[in-house]
Picture 1 (cartoon, helix red, strand yellow):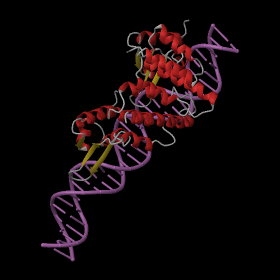
Picture 2 (cartoon, chains in turn brown, blue, red, yellow; picture 1 turned 90 degrees about the horizontal axis):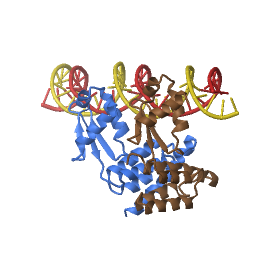
Picture 3 (cartoon, chains in turn yellow, blue, red, orange; picture 1 turned 120 degrees about the horizontal axis):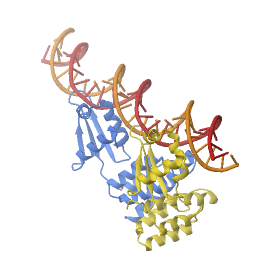
Picture 4 (cartoon, helix red, strand yellow; picture 1 turned 180 degrees about the vertical axis):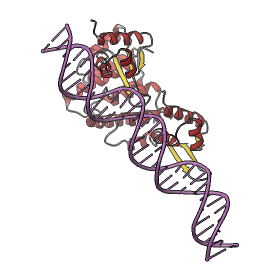
Length: 150
Length: 150
DNA sequence: TAAAATTGAAAATCAAAGAAAGTCAAACAA
DNA sequence: TTGTTTGACTTTCTTTGATTTTCAATTTTA
């Protein structure tokens, strides 16, 4: 447990604890821990994944950054995320959306937008890939909906 | 947000907020922000684009100027739908989302949801396919928006 | 005096340099 | 073997500066 990756992971978790999101500079962080910048990517790729309830944004170039968002850590959200799994059919997605609507987590128009973005026609792919893609994208949406900072 | 380009962008947006347009002297502005004049062009070219709903005029020589206009939003959504081609990069999508937000066609949280659904992380595909897929899905969202606020 | 050339004041362009994050594969460790 | 660390290389975004183009005002010239 004494490897750098775990330490960096913990550091990030600690830092974002209350705010639910964090914006870092990859290079500074690498500097701080005296490691290769790509080490940060490794940590992000292996620990801060959609499956674990994290989403990321980043920008390169001058003024660049990496931003990590975390889902709220309550059981319901975790369960919903977990229930999505590796593949997600259109119908299952609609069920989940309905439930999110009932629980007032999303509005009607937000439901419609998500449906429009991730319906079968929108994701023009062979079926098996499509459900995988939808699972992934939907997780990203879930994390956005249940961001720790709201 | 520590880079000059973003700061200049915000300055211009603030200044033109009420009137919907602004006339500046490129050199004075560059002076004010202590940057190269061409930096102003960079900001204009990357931020005050057609996608974001701005048009520009300018004149060189003595008494020269640059004028930026926020375009009148008249069936914006339909126009954007036309302009999205076969491929749509993440960045261009963000430009469009920003504009849809500015014109109050979608809320901030709707912007975030769409971004989450169609960001690079969500659409885990090879780059070319990804932009194709995004174009498709985004158009589906635009159509939904047109239906929604008719 | 009217057209033509000159000058100086802008803005536009373009390419190079700089800044930051991403990728990938090889080496290393458990 | 699996997971971690490192570094070389790539891509993206920003900043800077040299050069070019355009315009208005002024000065020459016919």
